[in-house]
Image (cartoon, rainbow, N blue to C red):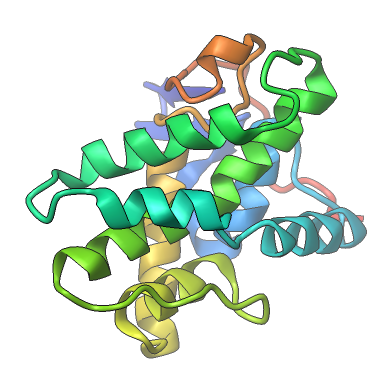
Length: 198
């Protein structure tokens, strides 16, 4: 999925130079690319964004669990525990087909920022802020953590950060139900930019 191209000293995701993706794409577009192998069409992107936004809210049980985290808990412990709980409350926990794994991956993608943000605020004695479905992925994270959205260039910088981490942190839903929260980083063959975005 990601590969370093020594001849150009460039990292690629699915054959696209990461610097081009960071400049021209949103995190949501790159998530689609990593999962499905090519950049989405406008219709595919709109459907993907709509589905991700519809899945952002944490269940009451998961929020109650996050409230039980000790204030001194490490953020990685919080996200690990929250993601494990997502797996336990999933009605198709043991389904391992491609459709189920993509749904689980999208659920985790949508809810992980809410888990991180809620744990962050609770550690500081603040109430969690519910996600908004009218904000992009990165802007929504800022909203949930800080209660507001910063300037567009700051949101874009965070988006770029997510894109840069995306190819090395397991953005592809795994094939096994026990592994759907484990990082993976396979490689792919290189293709050249630009690709058509129908």
